[in-house]
Image (cartoon, rainbow over all chains, first blue to last red; front, side, top):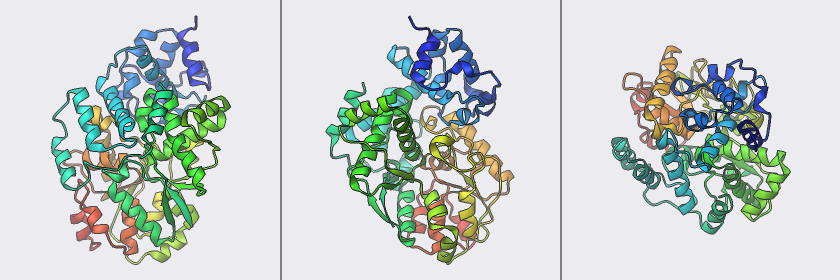
Length: 173
Length: 283
């Protein structure tokens, strides 16, 4: 059986994360580190220690905004942003509930909109998100303001060849 | 010069002033745009955060369509779409097995020959600052912007192939040619929080407030961006006492070129830029 570390490295398919020597440059430059449960370099150490459950149930993997500052500055080219993608994907595949459930709900609402229309219609996507998250009333004022400015069209063109888009979703399941 | 044009979803909704101003500036500079045939969403953060193959296949479908059109150069104004296109192309160029799989998934040939460009690169490098200067009829005197590139246009550098990715200058150069008094700051590429704006709004409030505080400290009276996600966050998520007007760089180019439409675009912003612009006699 593969170790957690081997599994993560295989999915990253690039520089093995054990090349990290914990200089903490990733954490120092991470704009979201202040809100994270574990700092990015700590996640690397936890993966090496086989702490799969703790990593995949942490808020860190969902709060990473994919700004790519870490990989840009890592002296060892460890792709931490890609690692976070891999960890999120593993958590979803293993059915582990997201600690930041609204972050995942947003991604799901977004993808559901692409699947049904080929393109994002922002008001429809927001309704989908609000139903999933139960966060019904935030940003209502701003939404109305944008609607009145004509920035949230209720009707917008779809991709015509929707079958091609749905095939992509089916084949990448 | 004729190129493919991929607006992406935002430019048909919350960022429509970006779409319209890019088109106006391109027309003025003699760049003809042909919208990508039956395009679909790039997948954005949602796809790459949850499903790697999906995050490559969605842009690949559009890239294949661009290649088939014969207009291989594609202009992508949204920094998020630009980044997803560049990333997909990068992964597909470096992994033959993935390329085989993705070609099957999208059901059409993929050569990897599309040339993905952001308008700031096209205007700065292909058109050139001299030709931009020739088009200026109204100098943006009194405007003191800081330029804000955000993340997705510049990182990771080996994918985005952006020069001086820690301290880029393309937007600054263009704004200076337009006559603006560009202020220097060290937050050009600091993250605004991106799509967390919906799901974890208070985090984005904090990041945006920091950016606005630093922009003010640098002596700026506005912020200029090249990304619809940055625009949405900077324009809507700052605290009342820190707010500054935010512009797409193309709106300011259109204004300096004397093109029609600018005042309509400015009305669409959340932070009303008309007191600033009116006070400076720019509108």
